[in-house]
Length: 316
Image (cartoon, rainbow, N blue to C red; front, side):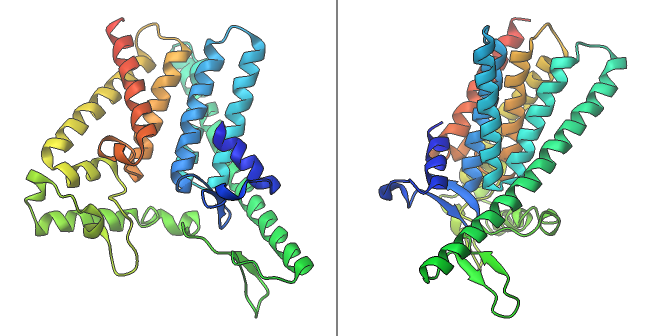
């Protein structure tokens, strides 16, 4: 909620000066306190808990309030242009809609599942409309400001030949299709991790405190392994990976049980969906396990959800 309020102040040009270095547009991507991907993941968790509270609230006003907040968090997530997290949010929403309608039975399963896929596709299409629209509005705002004041905007670049304007960003991205093959350079980072392990197999035993330099290349330093399981393998070695796999297996098993076995309500299934979405996000970022030092909220939320899933399964 605080990040949403700060984003509102940023959009209105009312953000206090001391917050300008922490809340800003990185190109057109929303960077609120953290990298846009982390900001998006925080909004994803907020969406999940809003869904949960909407389901468990007894008053319609509260249900409407939490659903409106969830929609607002999704819109803000779109402004981060964090594609994996947005897709996770679509899975969370479509999955919640699926379990809201589906009450069991294979005959209803297939048409409701198809409807859920349609919802997912529509939500992701909405994101693909919203972010380019926001980007274009931001460019036009900068151009108008330049025309009015006569000063240049350091975040704006205008091609002198074509006159096309674009925004400078630190967290650069290509198009979705261009980045799909390497998952926006993630596969290159993973190969660098595996190469480092081949060159120094003792990493598997003792880990290394210097992951950042091992995955860096002459062009840029990604900072970490961009995968929660590779990160803990690199940081602690095979013992750490073993524990991470144990928790992952527990989570997947409990999620499956909550989804399809026992008399679990929609509220519990939403928590299971949120845990699943955090696992999906952990595939491309080091949010989980060893990443707790830098991303405590994601790690905390995942293990909080896992704790409840474990208790609910025991109570079946």
